[in-house]
Image (cartoon, rainbow, N blue to C red; front, side):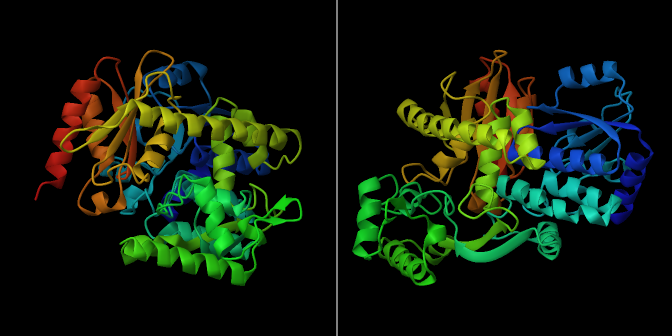
Length: 459
């Protein structure tokens, strides 16, 4: 890995102008920001663009634009085998790829080194490893890499970051930009009133509380924990150690009394990551909340807003990002409701919903993940969310549980082969993957998808 990174570092040091191409999610945004920050510190001229997917339209355009060097971050592994590409480029990615690319010197991907890109190293982590190979002073960018990893749910499998992600975390702690601690793992520790945090809890679902605001308030009232401090709602970050212990203990009792086993109950608590230089009780202090803030920018076409926040803007762009975040949350609530109303259709080996134009194609994967963690949804089948793209194509976002992956499911293979069978493109990770397919081919796609899932999960 070090040898490969050193070669890529030499490519970047020789270049006078670098064009960065990155993905539109939190991991892609932080990866692109790490690339930009690295180039700024090298005094190298650069430009950056954000793309939903690396299709032939993007590649054909790049061929005509004649950049000296293109740096693909959080995507690019799918084009390494393309002999038609005439421009100079390098790739720092983490999505499933062809292991035969091991000897391609301009391709850095954890899978090439027998690591799993779904939990051992993110796209932003790959970009960071190259950045700190160029200059050890770039280790402060570890904070962005951890935000990207958390946005990519890389901590989900073990309830903490592991492997190369952990090495990056340690570098960030040493650089004074990161902190790690054990705590409740529900989203909203920093910015949501605690009753809201419990109301929207979904991993694990809290029986009788999740989805019920009044029940969440009653739960806290029964523990004699005040909801407010004066006129101000109290967030988890404001709770004393004793209050936190009391809530967690009661939640454990609740889950056990409802028949939840040790594995699910233990998911209440895990490692959380804080950005040491950011103010507490803000979206920027918690890595997961920071990632959600970024998702609310680039996924809605506001790439520059997310980029500037990552690069340090705490004025105009941060204000705009927070406004976009409010809209993003509203869209997620509406999207979840729409998907439930449309209904999830169950087949033998897969379940799916079709949102049409009711849910943006850029957030249908988030909705699918939220639904899979909903107590009303079966979690022993992978879930696909379909949404219509602006060009008339269909986006398919597939999500699975860690349990299914442990049984042999690999969505990256399943979705790629299913998409190719209908002249589409797909890829991703074993637990989360996506595809773009022609409109009207959903049924054919589902048949192939189910066939491949059956192959993988059959004894």
